[in-house]
Length: 164
Image 1 (spheres, rainbow, N blue to C red):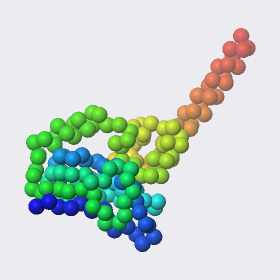
Image 2: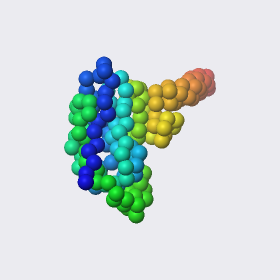
Image 3: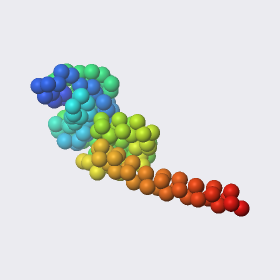
């Protein structure tokens, strides 16, 4: 018997949300409470987790799609453990991880894009290494003294070069 994975009930002031990132693909084995998908609204990012161990059979809503509260997102077949396959999948995901795969909040994503930063260089302090706005702000602040110091060193070098 398949279990329906639905979007959570959105807050009263939120009409719809966008499926921002699927952390699992069709056919993947998942453990209870494992993160499946992130839904981003104008106010919050909601995480949908697996209700129990099983296999994610069908994803019904693609990333980037707009959905309403309680929308059907996917189907899960309970009981299939797939424990033997999971370490390989995790190793492959880690080896081929891209910036898009890095969990981060919407405010952090906007700051990273606006400043042209490499998200892989930022240490996430949120749950499961998630990058939040404070992490990005701290990263930017840590980079500025280095930039200022190298600029003054360049000025000092060019001043001494012209004096020779």
